[in-house]
Image 1 (cartoon, rainbow, N blue to C red):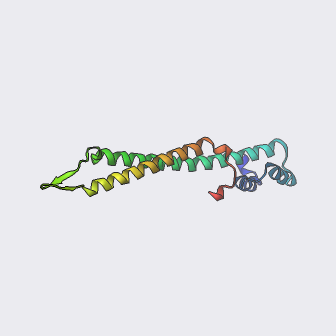
Image 2 (image 1 turned 30 degrees about the horizontal axis):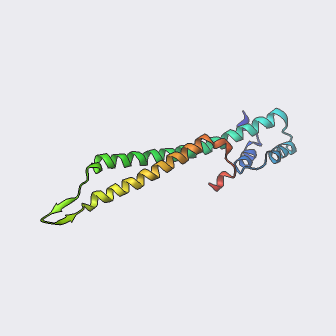
Image 3 (image 1 turned 180 degrees about the vertical axis):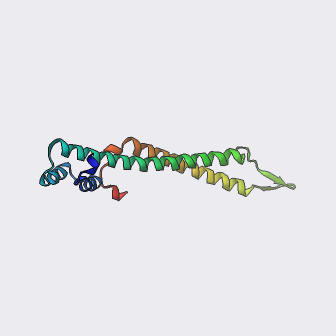
Length: 137
């Protein structure tokens, strides 16, 4: 198995840091790993990198979906779609502050949820094209 190769951990670190492919293969050649074996080690390390990036994207997507569901539950659970202005006495108008604050919170949560869903989806779809070190995330 490729992951049991002595050079796999070193190659994995280099791939996670997004080092140049030629530098990785140069390191493998120095350690007498060439040809198909070197390519398999590199491909396994790339697969680990993409898997790690997609897991991060799934976490963002899950957070976004959770925020969206909480915002929708707040909106419909507290009947924020039926808010009205309350009248007291002959002319005093008061807005029920708590439902409006809850509606504001739900709107912010909805916007944050949409942002995280889009960001997570993009990270999942384009994980193999990401440049730069994973440590920078």
